[in-house]
Amino acid sequence: MLKLATIPDLGLVASHKRPIQDGSQYDKLIDLAEVDGMYELKKKNYDTTDTVKLMADIVNKHYKQVARLADHLKKPTLKQSLRNLWDFAYTHIQFTEDPKTKESVRRPATTWADRKEGVDCDCYGVFVGSILKNWKVPFAFRRADYGNGGYQHVYVVAPMNGKKGQLDNGAYYTIDPVLNAFDLEKKPIVRKSDTYLSGSGLYELSGFGKAPGMLNGGGCCCDGKSGKQMPVFKRHRYLTRDEIKIRGLLLVSEWLEKEGIPYEKTMDENTGTEGNMVALPTGEPVTLPNVSDLEDLSDFKIVFNSLLQRAETGIESVVEPVSDRRLAKWALIAGGVAIAVAIIT
Image (tube, rainbow, N blue to C red):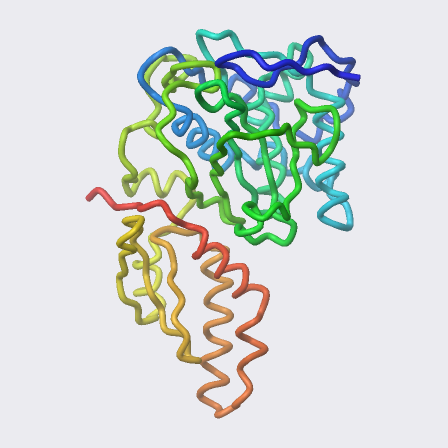
């Protein structure tokens, strides 16, 4: 059985190497064209919030590297799929702690290429999160503080029915390949912070306080090749139009105007989150985020037009279409976004 140890400023680490399977038969299921894609966090004045934001950004940009593997690992139920994913990562990817002076965050294909040498918990998180994004399964990167003065560990948790609220009431699965069992979470946790990613990849940060340092100590994010600071680590929450385009996203307000759907800009006074409020043909308001991808916007358009057609033809029963799973999915995406995104013109 794999023994675990808690080390100050680092957290949960394996006390020895575990035997892993060769796994070369899966190389054909992974895009190995960008195996050099790794970012290093070096000692500077940045905190673990930046680390998980980078993890989310890497998942959103590079999840397709493991799309074929995701198809291979998927099972009939969510629990079976997650158990299979944990088992695959645990038995094929070695765990190795990063040096205390830096922390490496890899793209999913790079994690696979480095599996024999081993990767740290954040690389596990990106790998697992990339598979879940291919499955369109909402999840969160959870940072855990075990009482050593800061967050020491990060891993993936997935709500049992896709609702973010379940992350607070215990109705979730834990996928942590550092530990030697599926759905196992180290306790007690003094403090936690969840960075939630909806099925579209939009994310929010919740439950975090100021916690200086990386998961291995203090750090900043630098490109592993050039040493330049990555744009995602600028100390604001703004995206340029080019950055939105690179992420494969659209400005929701511009899309609504193009589609001729009336909307009003909104602002959450508590979080500073901007949004776009649309009145459904049933009279119910739905607040959409500032940015989204075309697939989710298309789903919303289908449901909106369906409700509009029913309203125009005088059909009274609109309860069923409102509960359409696509609208439920969209409501989850819209409701799960608590990060203010502004546009730099």
